[in-house]
Length: 227
View 1: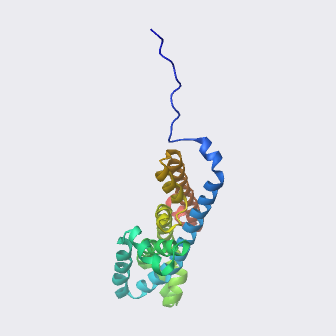
View 2 (view 1 turned 180 degrees about the vertical axis):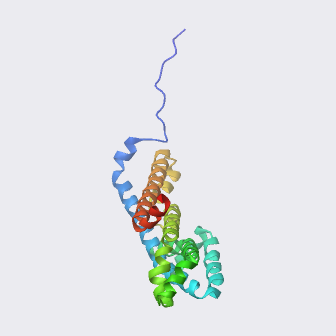
View 3 (view 1 turned 45 degrees about the horizontal axis):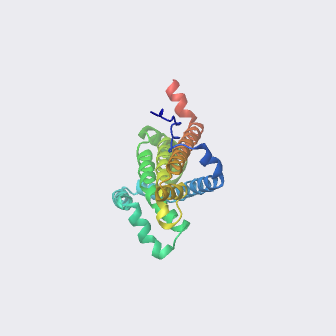
């Protein structure tokens, strides 16, 4: 009777440092694409959301229709939205960017509006007593006081956008989503897991950076908590 041959256990197919080393170029390219898309989409959405939320704050009758419209846009499935845009904007970055901006608008408009509406009425009364007009009060009193809510909205929109960028693979521009899709097609688990981990780390890095920026922009909030 022959003895059983001993074999080493198979390597874990979900983690492979060898894959990272062999595909470093693809990983860095996809990560750069993912990062730039996220930052650009959130920046554009913020530029659009600020005046929209300010207008809704100054004209409360606009708040309902504005939030409702952005809410309807947010409910459109991402695959369907990219598919609807592709015939008009083509395949690639522009289509993905428009979709990402559309989804980020709801989060940003709501948070900015909530922040503006939540400014202490005593602060507004003090500004009126100093002769502040409506526009000056908005720019120099209400927006600075609404910063914590605005930063919270930007953080949420950024993390959400990091996840949504991956869906851009349907129109050929999905950052790390390209690697995930390639891994699914080839059943290469290490590629899927590596792209997923990088996506999570990117979201955490952006969130931490925005948290620190928010603390730096609102020193009075720390002073209030410590008092």
